[in-house]
Length: 356
Image (tube, rainbow, N blue to C red; front, side):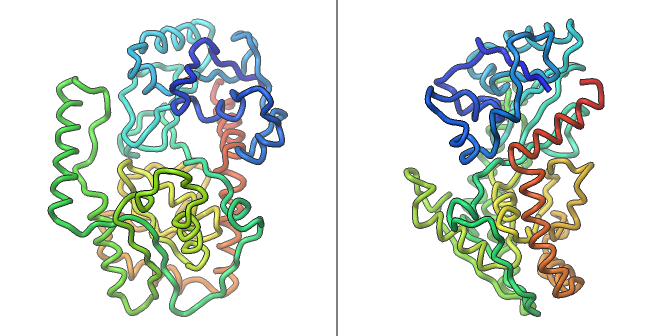
C-alpha cells in the first residue's frame, strides 16, 4: 500500500498538529528505524511512501484540520481535498484536540478524531485511539501482564484529578457556555460541547464507589491534571505512581476528561486491566469490529448511580479463569488493534474495501 501526503503543508512549528501516523517518519536526520519502533511501534518497512498522488492507495492530509483553521489556511486544505476528488482519491484527515473543529463535508473525505459525540458523528467520521508508549515495557521493562488473581471483592483503581466542589463545577460549566456561544455565533470553529463539569462527574462517581461494601477502592486523588507536573512528565514520580495504581488494581475507573474521551482507557487496556467505562455518548475505535462490552464494564451516563452494582455484576459473572483470560485479552486487544501500527493497518484495510 502506497501512502501520499502533501509535504509542502508540513509546519515544524506546529508539529503537535501533525497527522499522527506521520510523526514517526518526519523526524530529524539520524533518527533510526530501531528508535522509531521503540518510540512509536511502527517501522519504515510498514509504510511505502510515494511522491506521486496518482500512485497512492492512501492519501493523508499532512496537518490536522485544526492547524489549517488556526493558520487561516483552510482553503489550502479544501483545495487539496478537491484535487484528490478530481483524481478519484479519498483523503484521510485528522480532527485533533479535546473539542475538535467543524469540518466541511466532502464525499471523499474521511475524518479520524479522538473526541466528539458518537450520536453526532457523520458518516465519514471515525474514532481514533489515544496512542501511548507501551507502559509495561517503558516502566517495568517487560511485556508480560502482571496477572492478578480473582478476588471475591475486586479492587477498583483510580489515580487522577477529581473535584467535588459545586463552585468549581459552576465555573467549568460557565467556561463551556462561553466557548459554545462563540461557536454558535461563528466567532470560533470549535464544536459545541455538552454542558458538563467533568471533574465533578468524576468525583461523584468515585464517591459513589467508595461507599460500596462490595468492592475495595484504590484511589489516589490529585488536585491538578497530572498532579500539576509540567516538566519531565514521563519520568516523574507521580507518573510511576499512576501506573503502579493500574498495576495494583483489577478494574480502573475511566471517565472522560475535558474532551469526550479518556487516555486512561487505553492505558488501562495496555496494562491488562479492565476499564469501568462511563459512556457519555463516547466514540470508541473500531466499534464495528470490537465487541467493547466484552472488554469493559459498560456504564451508561444515565446509569452512573448504579456503577458499583454494575461492577459487582460484571465481576461475579466471571470465573477465576475468565478473569485472568480477560486481563490477557485486553492487553492483546491494545497491542493488536489500538497501537499506532495495529490500528492503522486495520483501518487502511477496512477503508480500502469501501473504494479507497
